[in-house]
Image (cartoon, rainbow, N blue to C red; front, side, top):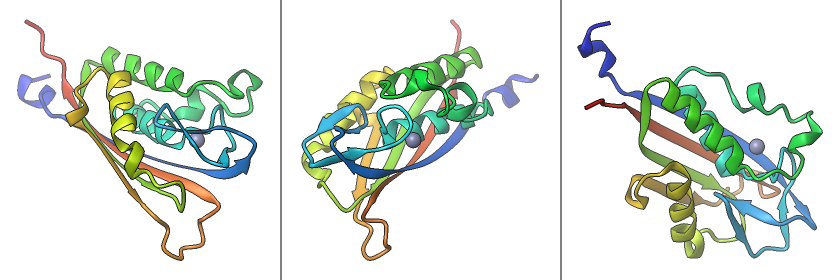
Length: 165
Ligand SMILES: [Zn+2]
């Protein structure tokens, strides 16, 4: 492969949604947020980390989160979603890439993400081993779209080729 071809960066995109459920903690981006309900579903229901995992896997054409961590496997019930991000990151690195930057948009009626955005940004950056200035955290409310019962996350990543000395 010519060096010109191999130097082309790769993009990835991930999307996820989970329904709110009372009695479970709300985890978004690895941060536990104070709220009367959390997100039900796969593992700890961390919608942002699941979308991030899919974006990382997609960027290196390595399938999706369900390929490696099937939701039907009881092993992943209540699991810390950071595990999925770390595995996706390992596959990205194995493919010869590193994370350039990440951008995300959350869509949820409540709680407000603004007061927690810096904490989420720091946590996601730490997980990826990059500077917080390379992680975009944005949030919107559904505005009458009928999805107030759920949280939705969109994540885009850019990967750059690992350069060897
Ligand atoms: Zn999910």
